Image (cartoon, rainbow, N blue to C red):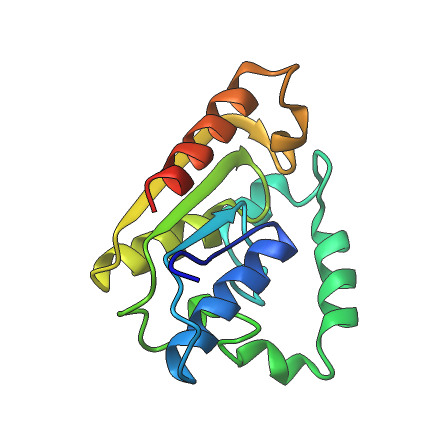
Length: 161
């Protein structure tokens, strides 16, 4: 296909980012875009956002510890950039990215850091941050204006790929 992208929310955002890295490193397919919506990008719990939002709402540090323990064979696997894309040494030559982060989310800081690292590596990045929203807020489209705005922005970025 002429235009192929990857997208995902939360753990799906992790898989989308890892797929983009894998496609770059192992010969394709060529991706036109990556949409990473409050993505998991690092197997670490030492950020301010984990401190501020580790008790929720919706997603907690305990949830994330449980998820990681079931995702990785061993904690050392969390250092692998295909599990923790933020740990990749080189983020250049990845497809343009839309990254959505939200303020009341333990994943906030790692999502922001990933968007910043992509931009620093020369990747075209549209980073939209919603400070008043919690993890999973895109499921509230039709009910919450910020969710509608975020979904419209993601759709617009996909339409331009």
